[in-house]
Image (cartoon, rainbow, N blue to C red; front, side, top):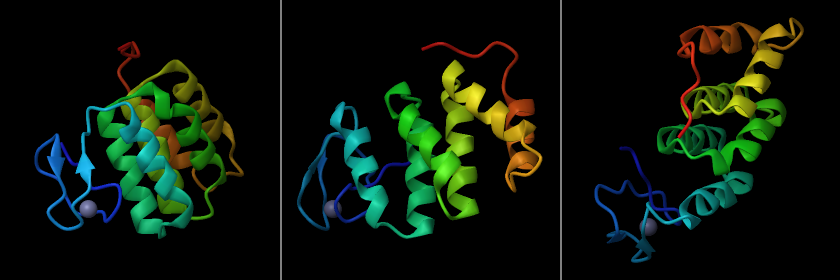
Length: 129
Ligand SMILES: [Zn+2]
């Protein structure tokens, strides 16, 4: 699993751990980790915001869904919106899938083709976990 220090964005290979770069303690199984990642969003570059979405998607935690939906709809950078859509697809929560479907059906949205692909790749029955 891909994971990063929420302070300095150093890649983390085990958890819980102490970041070798900045010394903060990280526990990616903690409930705070999603929030710590989401708190980084406003001050991060587009590439980093996309990476945060990727990590959140891999964690498959529904708690991040409302923020991911808002990112998918509102972020100014297409790569970040698409990363958020993919994360919602990976999480597979019905509320996330509904939002992806809305984007897919909105032909005026620049992301509708990608959203359609993501819907297509989702398993027929959305996993619930
Ligand atoms: Zn660090």
